[in-house]
Length: 137
Image (tube, rainbow, N blue to C red; front, side):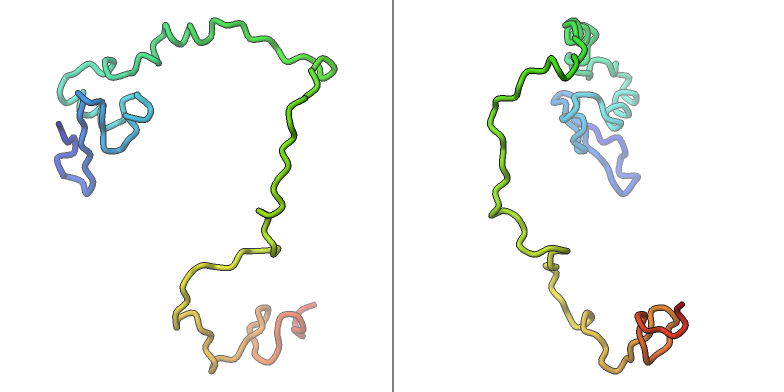
């Protein structure tokens, strides 16, 4: 076990090279050394290529591409699709159009101030609104 940052930064990551494990999760997911593993290997003078999974070896990549790929033919040569058509369930559709209502819990900060008079959004004067603003052409 080795922590590459030695708690110098606010965040530190633990790397277990024997288990192919790192706190960030990239090393386990991709099976390619993340930057934490690279730091540990360079600090410990360990060969980094031993921690690259065999899936990424040149042999396996060549094996994946040794099959000949055929170009897509014209649409006239395509076979007719005979599988079932998927129809969406109408009961799963939203009943109301527009933006869904918020789930946030409202408090006193969300209440409008009753003493404050509304202003026009166009000219910022009181007594009218944007739709009937006299300064708007």
